[in-house]
Image (tube, rainbow, N blue to C red; front, side, top):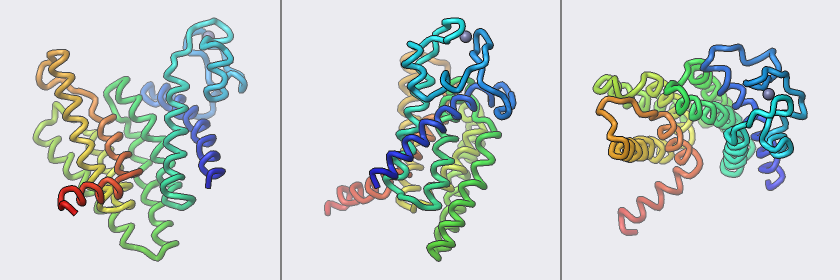
Length: 260
Ligand SMILES: [Zn+2]
């Protein structure tokens, strides 16, 4: 198991490197494949050894080898975050079809969080393909376990969480982007597959953390009401707490609430 988790971490570093490519190219509508990475400042094509996750950044002392432009710490942070998420998914969900779907979701989630912080948008190109990818993995898991209720739960989770944000969006279209509605539907699908307890914890934590963060931002910056605060990162972070620890949190909460 320790070996499997380490392998997942290494795979996560590589996928985190790919997440950096998505973060740079998807919002700019550039093709993300078939082209080597370049330095954003001098345009020099990067060799494979300039592109090793985290290590190249340390080795090059945080500067481009060709023009010495500083390389933001964001690159290795994205790689490490993806690695941590991958390792956690495998530690919690083992080697399974569901894990394959959650790893895909982890890669998309990291890219979406950074893109939303950058440009206040959750691009369809990342959100929409992830829905069939997660559903496909859940269907494979349901078939392997003979547990078709899991697939039904995933579909219901997507409808419930997506529907909830759709209503919020109808009430307050300026505060919430429609991208948040689609992302909620994607996250609800994965949460539903893990369980009702995961869906409850992940679904409640997103608005809770997002609401607190939004209130703090408005108070601190005296932001005008109606200004859009990137909500995607909180929605996604809340969902990941649910995906990784939802059942445990739900059980402890119920124990406390029921005084058991
Ligand atoms: Zn350069």
